[in-house]
Image 1 (cartoon, rainbow, N blue to C red):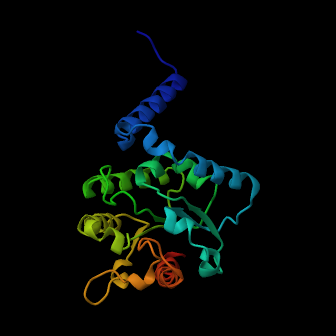
Image 2 (spheres, rainbow, N blue to C red; image 1 turned 180 degrees about the vertical axis):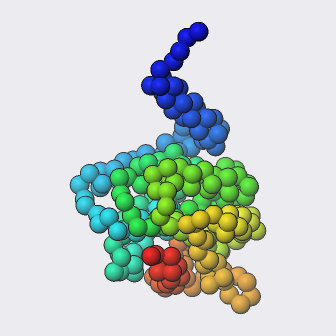
Image 3 (spheres, rainbow, N blue to C red; image 1 turned 60 degrees about the vertical axis):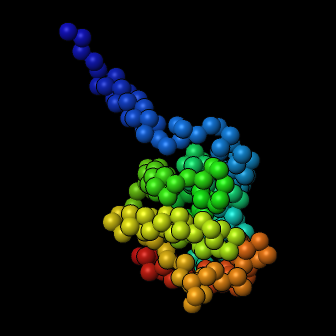
Length: 235
């Protein structure tokens, strides 16, 4: 009878875990081009991490163009230092692929995420159920290196440009909110109601001409809602 050493048993366990992790990954079904398009922006973050120093108690913001275009982020979040890691067109599927590089080697006191492109009225749109699954997998990867710190997920904003998709987007928000409610150190930042009129339509005065991205007035409102939640959940 062949006896395996503890070292080989440990290696086998690691390989088996890695295989199981990848076999469960939602990335299996996506072609490389579905996330390779973001490679250059992600590598820019890696370059920043190699040349800039960030305080260990920073707030790490990750996500799509609303994070990238937040020009007053540092000012709005003061006195908390921030790390800004938003890239245009981000989907959960590519954020999953690049999780390690988005997080870098930082040791933030909190991570705040916002990604709003998985449903936008194109053939490649995901179903609300799939978006919720992608979110859970993204969180799973994030927790491998940041197991205990608070993670805030910002509700997808209702916009005029994607109003036809709002019923599905609203369902995504509801699914993620429900998951956050039962998961430790995971918090859902509600913002949608503040961006709707009393008639229940998007407040167009809060957006630039494309009716998708926030203008300064919109960012002022958004940041006030997000910062209130940050202050509530920081120790």
